[in-house]
Length: 253
Image 1 (tube, helix red, strand yellow):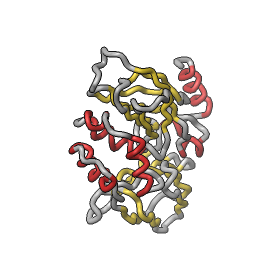
Image 2: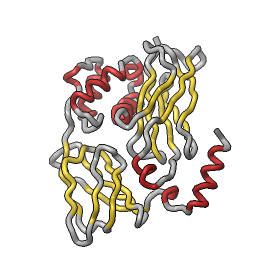
Image 3: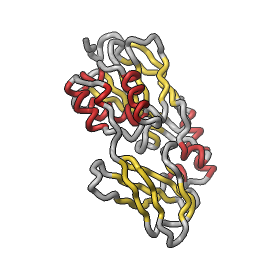
Image 4: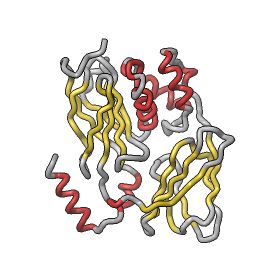
């Protein structure tokens, strides 16, 4: 049974438990966009700089999936509230992020099957295929979620691709995924990144204020491509400006 937004719900505490690798590397906290499923819609809430938890009312008779996106984009932290569990705290982690994002993509069009599945059971199956929680063929899984035929066979490893980078600015490039290796680039040397999963893989070079985005296609026969842009403003502003933003954000918590 589904409950509309005017019917009773349950208060839960949603907590980001992990630090983003770029937060650890830069010493700065990020703001996050929290996306979650509520009835037939996806809700978006912005968490200010340094805010790691929020109290929300959710429908108590269904599974509610959460994904927290650092700086509004990139790889999210994820988790879910389960109606069958007696826990009021939802812990969002990096390992659960890829599954949460995949399910929320499905919920945009087909919310009912997502609200009735067992997130933890599906997540445990994902871990049997990938210990990082990523690198899964999410499109294949999504078909079974929508059809209501989800099983162990619905979760299988996705394709990977070796990517070769030329003329990349030198320096240390920190990956936003804790499960993908960072690397150091030297001038005029080719960089070989092995077995990257499908999706957008991002790296930052804090010394030069640059962000590298590697786009890895779902299909193995397609080529990956990449480009370099300026990294997010929060990583480039002065320490004084950052502290001012941090204090303003605390004023709203």
